[in-house]
Image (tube, rainbow, N blue to C red; front, side, top):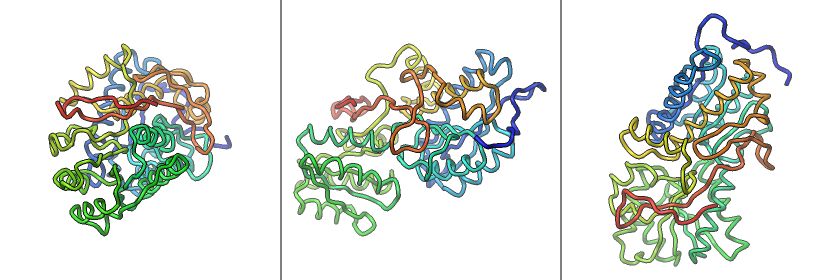
Length: 370
């Protein structure tokens, strides 16, 4: 890497904490519930690191900035955090904000471990400065497409809003389904009300409707409309982006929100670390932790491992991505180069297709693993 020495320095000699900048969507139009879970995981891991002695005796500190899912706010936050001298960046849930943050981190020479954004093209070019924990969208959504095919669905309708993320997901599904006899029809939610969507869906003969839209609007009204339309009694609703994972989904929809398969990045059974962290996260959140909370915890666990081994120098942190190995809540984490992805990638976090049990919407069923 051709970079000047890190302004963060190689070590702390004045007793000041080692600081990590955290990018989190905490206000609308960001997915606030996901942001709250992500932050809970990040904060819990910082507490655990400090309880275990910090970074070679130096405390670890989180400097949090709200991105609100806005790429401009995310880029500005990276600039500010770089000036504040953070050793690395962590977090971000939304792919569009994470892309902007990754571009600025690459330009500034600031290591960024992205927790949750899945868009394959997290950067426009290969970079040594950015690594990612979440599975790439092409990996997870292909597993979801295999689940649909295995359940006998060959004609899939997609209710979509315009965004790079939704368009990329629709393309992954279409490209994976087509060679296997599946077809997709895209329904533009800019032009359709939930009632009009039901009319379109009834005419297409699709057996599954996938929600590639924001939550709670328009996802929740769409689910209610489809559930109440007798013509669509046999149509399965799916939400690959994970909307039903969060408690607000069940609170908004009750039984209507059950039996809607979604992707989440958890193993079938958590190991001892994952179980302990899960209990602590539940206490912190006062509700069941989502996979996003575990992603937050694992992000800090990895960065702490790197900082202990290499100090707070930014360049040495970035150089450590291919060599770091850390115990995470969902498995052993290592990074590698993956074809078509320009960042260091954990290949792969465990992937499930799950849904809420119609007999008990507070309980999850695992429908498929990949």
